[in-house]
Length: 533
Image 1 (cartoon, one colour):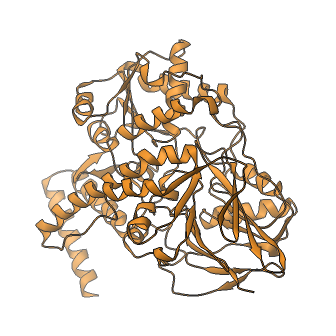
Image 2 (cartoon, rainbow, N blue to C red; image 1 turned 90 degrees about the vertical axis):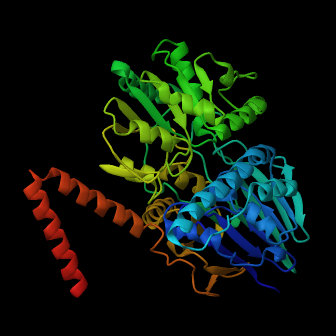
Image 3 (cartoon, helix red, strand yellow; image 1 turned 180 degrees about the vertical axis):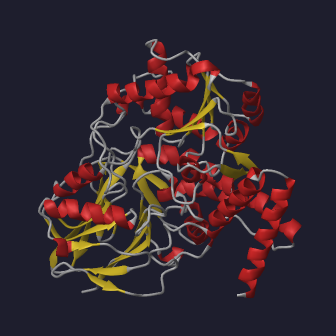
C-alpha cells in the first residue's frame, strides 16, 4: 500500500504561509497556498520556488480567503498548476477582489524596489505575480456548499464545515481511500473563530478522526468573556477618548471582516448617541469592495440586516480613488480613519501615519494581531521613531490596543474545539502558531484527556507518513528553507533601524554642539574598535 504523506510547506512553528501538501496513492493536493508575511527573511520565501512541482498538484482545498492562506494561489497557477481550487462561495467571492488586489500590491512594491535598485546599481527583480496572474487564477475556483460531501479526487472526498473565522471560512474534513482498509479520516481546522463572534455562529465540525491538524495562533492567550454589547462598550471608551479635544483616530484595519465589524459597531454607537457623529473615512479600496461582498451575503450572516446599508451611511465616507484619499489630509481633527494594511506594512495607512504619528492629538488604535517585524508591531511595542517611505517619523501619538475584535479563538476555545473532535485516534498535529503558543495549547489539550505522545509539532518543510495502523512517522526529505527558530526572531533591518534611531536620539539629546561633537567622536571610535576586532 502506498504511503500517505503530509508535508508542511508553511505555517509550521509560525503564523504565516499556510500550505500543506498531501500525497496519496492516486492524488497530490494542497490544503491552502498562502503568502508568507512578517520579517524579511520569511517574506523572501515567496520569491523562491515551491518545495514541490506545481504541475504535479491535482487540486487545492482552500480553507478561507485571508492572504496568509491564499496569497500564493496566483503563483501556483502561473507556474504550472492546472487543476481546480475548491472553496466555499463566500471564499470565492472574497478572492475575486483579494487576489487581484494582492497582485497589484506585488507589482507596486517591486516597482518601488526596482527604482531603489537602479539608484544603487543593483539588478531589477520581478514581482511574485501580477494582477493579470491573479485574475487568471480566479477561473480555477469552484464553489462548494457547506456540509455536502464532494469527490475532489479519485481517492479523496472532502466536505466543508463552518469555522466561524471570516465570511466563507471552513474547517475541511477529508477522507482518503486505502486499499483493504477503512478510509483515513483527517480534519484541517483552518483558522478557528472565537465564540460569540459578530456575523458568524460558533465553529462546527464532526468528531472521530485519525488525524486533526489544528491551528494554535493564540494557544497561550486567554481573553475575558465578551459579547456584542461588551465589545461595543470597550470601543466606545476608546473612540470617545481619542476624539476628545478635536483628536484624530487612526485604526489600521484588515480589509476582510475586521473592517466590516468596526464599521458596524461604530455606526451603531453613533446611531445610539454613545459616541460623537464624527466623519468616518474608509480609506481602502479593497475593504470597500469586500464590504459589498458582505452586503451580498447578508442573509447568511448574523447581526447584519438582510439589506445592510453600511456604505450608504451619511457618516461613512468610502474613498476609493487616490485623489479622494489625498483629500483626507486636509482634515485637521475630529475624525476617524480606517485604512489598510492592518499591520502598517503597506497600503494607505502608512500615508496617514506619516501625517499624524508625530502629533500628540492623534491616537492609533490597534485591533488585530501584529506580526513580528511588522511596523505595527514596532509601534505597538513602544518604538520612539519609525521610518515611513524613507523618512524618520517620531511617535508622539497615543498608542492603544483593543483585543476584542480578534478573528481567532483563544487558547481555551481552541482546546475545547479540539477536545470536541475526539476520539483522535492517531495524532493531533499543531500548526499555525509560534512555538510558545503551541506548547501552551498542547498542555491545555493534554489536561482535557489527549495523550501527549499523540501530539506532533512539525517544523517548516517537515514531512510525515500518515499511517492508518501505527503512529505517524517523521521523514526528512530536504534541508528546511528557514530554520525553525528564525521566523519569530527580529530582522537585521529592524535592528539597524532601532540602532539608527537610538544614535539620532543620543545626538539630539546632547546638551550643546560641544557635547554632540564628543558623541560623534565616541561613536566613530567605537566603530573603529569593532572593525579592528
